[in-house]
Image 1: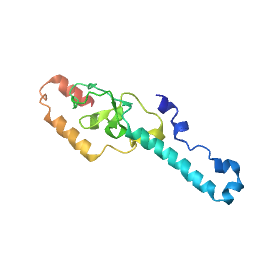
Image 2 (image 1 turned 45 degrees about the vertical axis):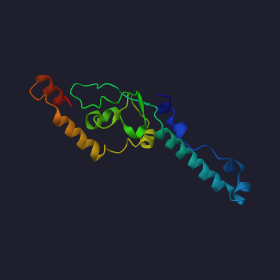
Image 3 (image 1 turned 60 degrees about the vertical axis):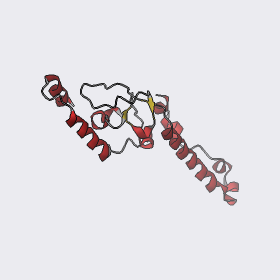
Length: 147
């Protein structure tokens, strides 16, 4: 929650010393380098957020008949292995599902969640749904109608 609430501050470039000092630094060509360094810091911070397992994820399927990898028991995961809750029925068999909501658009871009679910995940999900052997049960039909 903290990161989502403060994403604009955390992902914004910090003011650089070269720009604060004015034209003296630009005469020596250091303000451009300092600006590039600030951009790298924001990029590095996003890369670091994406490279560590820290996002809370669901461990148990929240819906009946939802394809789910029961071997995944960790309560945290890397962002490249996670999809937001809105993609639950599109990617639950091949991706971890975020336990919570991310509202900040810049944060969803850092994690790559602004892009549609990839084709591999969709095909895997369809295959897992097709493999379910519960089509004669009324609760299965109701769940699929709502999905």
